[in-house]
Image 1 (tube, rainbow, N blue to C red):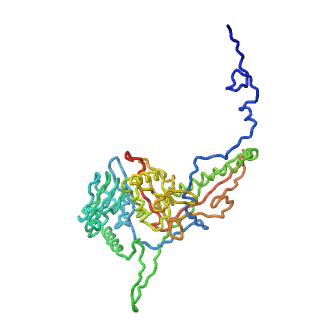
Image 2 (cartoon, rainbow, N blue to C red):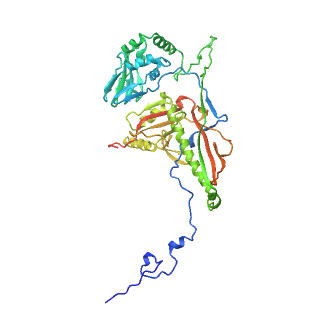
Image 3 (cartoon, rainbow, N blue to C red):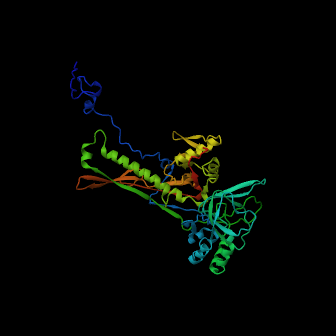
Length: 476
């Protein structure tokens, strides 16, 4: 018995195979229908909390000058090294970071000191200096982490701080009377350090009267009256009675205050006239192109405010306001240390992975770090201070990053953003769009520019927690 088959008719739906199609197919009908569309989407848009939370100061002249009181505090910087395989050398000019050598500019003498430095390796737990022993060497930390430990009120150990790559201690070893170590220095991780012994220093100083005179002068300057922030002291009298002679005083200022010039981020937006003329329904093509271009510029603006080597916050934080984590991951102790370094901390900024790492550390201790309401958004917070996500903070290949803590606002001597509004063809505050013409290919060009910078008004307005490990550990 033979079964007859009917050829498949054109235009049949797949589910109706073998049957004749009775109505218009969905695929064909969509060609004549008006679809519901979204505006162009962009994955690179972030929350940009830094731009939203910085108080913006109007800079009409294009330059912002930060006047500060004269400060006698010197040193406390970072030392730079050159690595050749396993060997490490200090850049001779970087020895000027030592307080007693600050300002000494004889390159030959500094080179002689650098050549006499000895490289040493220390394992975790080994002592680099012992409290009460003679301070007979300068210690430069090329790599690793060292903790400074003192004696507490009741005889127990008291952690005084942590030094990491580029840190140093023992600068008093080059003075005439170095005294004894006031703390114990112990390696937390494997460390590579450079040591300059007092005998090696004296060998070089014995041939350089200029070096000896410079050190004597720096020691004398260290006796000038100053407050705990290192600023020139203001003589005052209080609690007196009768008619004693009151001290005279004046407030001294820095003679060369820092000036911040507005930086710029720019691009040229090009749109063909055919697109601008014919394809503007239901969306304005030029408007959408401009919207996405501005989003990209704002993202770059926030990146520069964090990472620019001239005015970026990471590079402008005072060295005295930089600390390292105690154990690696960010802990509640680290956040408390950051808070204690300044008054009126208003914000933490951390990479989202650092926030997650902090959450894991809190979970280990059975702590909940709370949240805060910021303009209708619920954000994680520590001690009531919101922790804002900031993906522009770099993460190193070793899985470490940094966390910022800042006081914001010009009225409380904090961190401020700088911009100028009212510029020609302004489209948004501090951002303008200028028509550049139409070329021979009928392409319209617009110059899109935004002008900005940031300033740290006093050093303690901004703090950085460095060497923050964000990798999940095996016991996390």
